[in-house]
Figure (cartoon, rainbow, N blue to C red):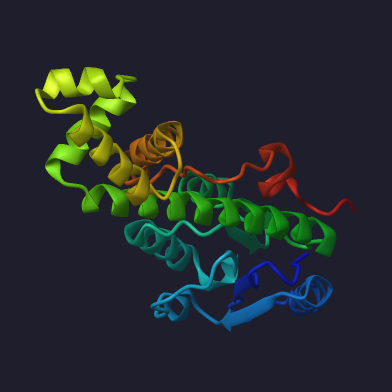
Length: 239
């Protein structure tokens, strides 16, 4: 549930004329979510700005090709919003391909609101974490772009654990100049110690490495995990 200090959580619902209206209404009323509804993925893809954190619920009635295009477009934009697919007896191959491309789960109809709610909650939690990763990456990237070449060199030595005196000797400059550059680096990173700079850079390097792999269309990273054994084509209501 959201609090007064939390950003609104937005559910993008692509229903394709679904028969699950009562389930969706119960979910939306109980969770007090903001909902933006579409009949087709192509309508959703017309949005230029997405509210975050968010989650997508898409009915497979829109067609397998439309779902594939939706996932591919999200990958190309670098926006892997948590995606929950709902369908009547979805083929196993379709479910596997969708989850390889990053879908959070593929649910079989008839669905239960409690089961759907648990996945929507996991989706929102995962996207909130993703937003934090994105903010950290953008902030560090901005700091690095503002640095001079000499400041970048000093930063490199700081990360290696060298003292001001050692850096001054290696660069053949005064310790006073190195102290000045170190102070400027702390200012750029909005921190009070070089250990905080190192911590931010460590997180940045991890995210940067994952972003390289993230460009591969069939991989999904920085997403909260939900046990596969509880999801997908196994998530059928017991008769």
